[in-house]
Image: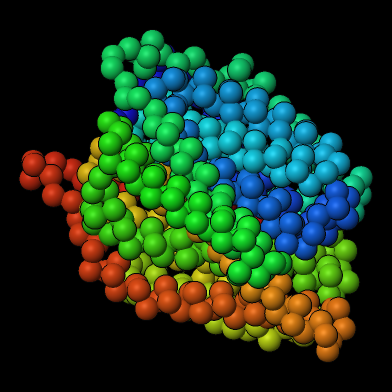
Length: 497
């Protein structure tokens, strides 16, 4: 539902408010990508293990994805500006704390808190954009700015992470995020209008805190078990205990959702239109997406000997191809149809990952990385746009926002689980090859295995594409003369990581 702005703003004030809200989204997407290039330096700085590095990424992604829907509910109930400022404050403190970390547990805890803050920032900021810009050209322009900022944040994070790591050091990767969030917080306080009184009046559904806690604990247990299996083996008691706990907690989450008056995941949403199949494919896409931006900088730095800045710069062609694919997706859809476009995007990515699976310990950027990076980036942009649209097709306007939040949640969670699986495979292949090969060659074997599995996952996604086509049906409305709902826009969209 579109809520009218609390008061009429001047054009200048509206522009300034949009800039502040876009900056909040920029901070969220920047933090998902800025850390990847710095991972080897972070590992050495706090004493992380090779498998422990994945938790610097996953702690943020898990908290962000698991709590994103709760963050949206909280913004609706408690006030959008109030939740946004609280999220920015937590994000700022957590980022600075991460930069001061001296032990692995302190760093991972701070990154988790950052993810919690991001889960409040992203839906609250987007809700404010929708409230302050009525339907029509003004909203279209605002959402265009929002999408551009999301892509720019990912690309800027890759470059800035390399500059800071090679310059003042890896700690400034986190300090810079904290300083940026503090500036955005100050701008939000001064520029974003206060929540209107009518938003706090009337009955509001209770927040599903129990559901959020059980799904978050269950996913953390699952990812921990999958990650530890690569180090300790599948028969280790801790691994088995973590996987068993994950099963119990996720089953408990299902029970909680069935009993709650306002569940995070309303009953029947996954069966509307193509919501279920599209979210399944988005989880698969998120799995390979996060894995790509985790393993690619490690290969460049640990095997090819590139510095952080060089590794960051070399990912810019991938980011550019990603944004180009996103821009071309609407034209491709008009030309060959949405589902053929989705299939083309997935197959293009799979081809790029198969190419990456041929990397060698003495490879070069031009020979082994540039071509596949362009293929993967373009295919990723096309597939992301198509899956986001499919995930809200056939959904009533009243549920469009929730469906848009869900597709971002599955992407984040799929990325965390996927990185755990890919990291376990890579660690196992590296350990197996270490007995016969030098360190760099053994690491390369691990990365090749991760890229090959990523290609297989995308192949599975391509096979499942007809499910999206069969389930994608326009929603039926009671009034045949009613106008169709506007095209949904994703809550968050960090295009590069």
